Length: 219
Image (cartoon, rainbow, N blue to C red; front, side):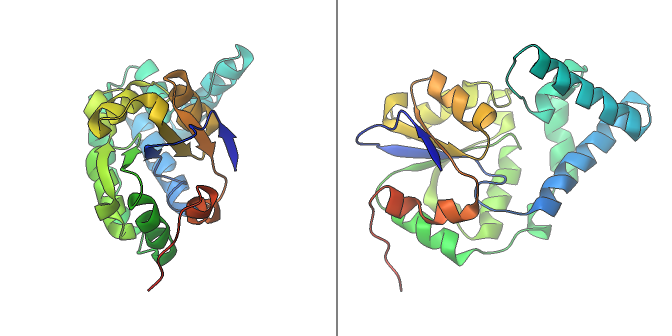
């Protein structure tokens, strides 16, 4: 776990969803794969051609020293509106087919939510985020859920983080953003004045109450 600019007395936490609140490599591959397939069909080209184009775009960003970005933003650069990306995701991605209850996650979030309001910011639509949290058995812990359709901007754009700050009624300096990707989940939050926690495994999420010196109530 790596940290940046953590407030001495945080008042709220903002989580990423995919590969942060759960680990499921096959589901992650499915989400990317099915969206790239739809993008290829929309462009009327072979899947391999679209995959190569996206790889080239990412490599060009690295060459120019630019931060990594989301598939939604790459698709936007290829002429696919965010509204279309939202519709594709709602049609093709069904979290309940992949995710199930996680008792240890529920335990950790119970402790965290007892001390902070919790928000969630995801590049999937809000409906998919809510379905994911329901499938994991942790929906009740989150005061606000910000999806791609709430701002029309995909992380690493800071707009979703700014909206989460407003919805939680807390200034950015009082918040910590928690996610698995530095460029996408941490850097835009830091730019707004939030703190950042980069996690690499779900086990680190389970340990967040201890990291933040909070008690865990076990039943």
